[in-house]
Amino acid sequence: MKIATVSPNGKEAVVAIRHEGEFFGTRCLVSRRTATATALTACSFVRVTTSALLRLLREEPDFAVKFATYLVGQSIEDQENLVDRLTNPAEKCLARVLLRLASHVGGVDPRPISTPINQGILANMIGTTRSRVNFFMNNFKRQGFIEYDRDGRVNVRDSLRQAMSEE
Image (spheres, rainbow, N blue to C red):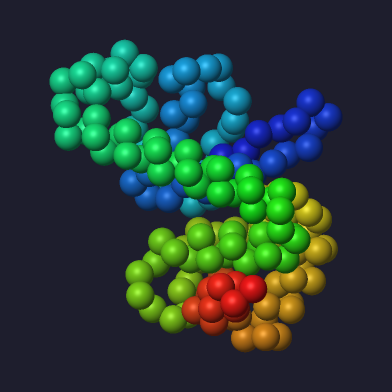
């Protein structure tokens, strides 16, 4: 799922990508809807009403702990993303986004990004243009940090993580 919001002047910002088994729409528990969720692949989801969720939180302690842990984790990730966008150049932000998207795949190198994602979405995630993302992606490919498979999906090599940690 792509979670996006639109500014008053009409510019879209992709604020998150949610993967299988993750919650989305949790902000509506405390405020009005501020974002739109769009499926990037065929998927199904379970809609839980606010009253049902509150009942689950009261009556199922294991679920309450899992949900609270998830929310705290998402809050930390949101803060890290904001700091990243405010303090780092777009190329480094893109590298971090690619690493986060590939982190949902376990211990293989290269790690495929399982979500079909295009350069426009990546540009909206880091606050730059599609042409800049294209430039950075070509640079990453030339340096051997990423590769494309036959279907055009991006595979992220561990060398990108190593290069990011050296900076």
